[in-house]
Image (cartoon, rainbow, N blue to C red; front, top):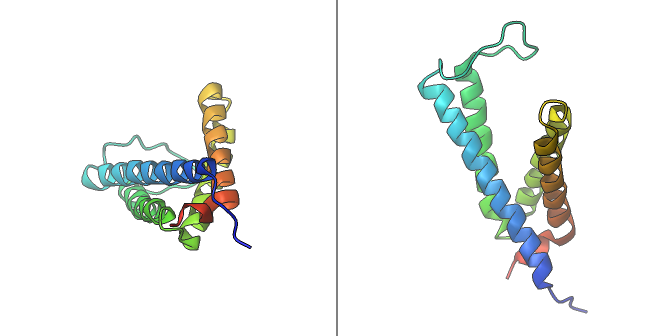
Length: 130
């Protein structure tokens, strides 16, 4: 028995794919900024994760490229892309929860978008394939 795809399900999955593409692009751009000019970022002493700006730049660049590729691959229905998308959105939601005391409205908005991305990829991720 075949199940018809809903246009809403396809729309939510497309939204998740576009969000992953944007996240990946922004992280790659932030990574390039840290690699090209490592004095671009302020360095905080005694931080838990003490890396120099160039190391963080490479982490952001590589992670951003993976997320960018996952975002494009969501449109092909790749399971690995949906898995990475759910993972990235989950991490983003946790970080945004920690960010609520600093920027409450922004933190809540990002959590809501992350939940929508997770829901779209887990409930309707395969609906986007043709």
